[in-house]
Amino acid sequence: MTRSSHKATAQRGPTCLVITMNHGEPGLVVEGVSVSEQVGNFSATPAAVDDSCTPAGMMLSRPSPRKANRNFRAGIKTGLAALFVISGVSTTLSACTIERGTAQVAEEETQSSAAKPPEKLAPAVSVRDGETGVDPTEKIVVRSQGDGLKSVVMTNENGYEVESKLSDDGRRWENDEVLGYYRTYTLKATDKNGKTTELTFSTQTPNGTAAVALSPLEGATVGVGQTISMRFGYPIADREAAQDAIEVITDPPVDGAFYWLNNYEVRWRPKNFWAAGTKVTVKAKIYGKDLGNGIYGEADNETSFTIGDDVRAIVDDRTHMMTVSRNGEVLRSIPVSLGSGKWPTPNGTYIIGDKHKELIMDSETYGLPHDEGGYRVKVKYATQMSYSGIYVHGAPWSVWAQGNTNTSHGCVNVTDEIAQWFQETVKPGDVVIVQHTVGGEFSGFDGLGDWNIPWGTWSAGNARVSTGG
Image 1 (cartoon, one colour):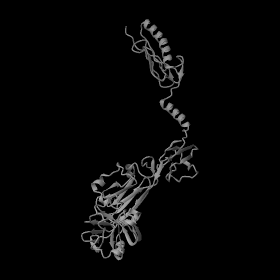
Image 2: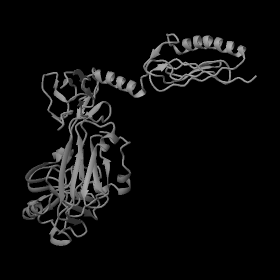
Image 3: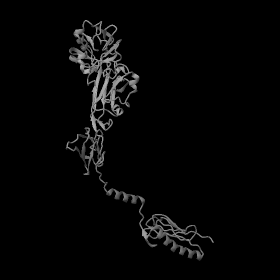
């Protein structure tokens, strides 16, 4: 026996529950549910009916055998019950619903969402409430999460208000001055939406702080032999951290390197003497930096200077003469008297240091008692060559020996007139080279003898090696 499927058709309109047969078996389709469900041979799918909710032009084609008809009626009852339970439709066969399209549902959901105002958020801050050890060099940033910042105030424990700046759009705030060590700050930020953030934090608490002195000084004009000195007020345990915080900028570019004379002082110099006219800037950005053992940089420092004319003096013990030149041109040849056999002047490269129109020279300052060949005497126009006390200075008592005999305790003796001329001709950083004496080599650690440390040693650096003191 051939079984035919039963179909219901209708015009579009209100949705009704309509029954069909699936695959030739007694069954039904219930229309008006939101999804398609199938139980056995029954399924529910959308279909339209007329405005009276009566299937328009419904036609049922039945199988001729009565058995099939009975099965069909039974299938209607069974299928309806199953589909009503599965689809969640609580109704009867004659129930009628008005179909809501997808666009209508989406519109209603959008309207519901739009009706709910967005949550108002308080300003966001770059530090947490109660945070400790905050780097005082870092900016504290406040950002609006609403309509813009209304007010932001940050004060330290003494009530001092930190200087600050607000972005043009009023949505970003930050401090405009560095914070201090050992400080506790309170910040209160209020947004235009009325939300407020209030918090407290504290900065780093070093075991101590170290300042750094830079030489040459700002605006100086120095000689081609001038090295850069960075002297800390506290012994530095982490030399690499200190070096990393120092930047040397030269115009034109010059290759150079750091070298530590001791735990307090690091120097920087190029491989060869500077070229005249070179511009140099040194930036020591040590504030907020841990320099080892909990010692932090006390403050940043900076200096800029210029390399002047190339002025050099060559002192030759064989001839007892000093030849002074500027940019390769000889200015003057001068008779001198150097250190005697007991106190010979060391060989090597010196650079000019301080200048004194008058200076009391006392041998006891470097360990030679007066009663053991020492002295205490006032001299004129003393120009420093070493930290250990070697000067070019006027020595009227040794004029007879100048140019032929060594009589000094290591200094370069000249007449008062020549001493004045020399002092007015040279500048700090100019080079003095002493040669052909019996005095050994001038120490590279003297303070003005940096050029006596070989470049291979200097450029290799000693940041990881303690030299004591």
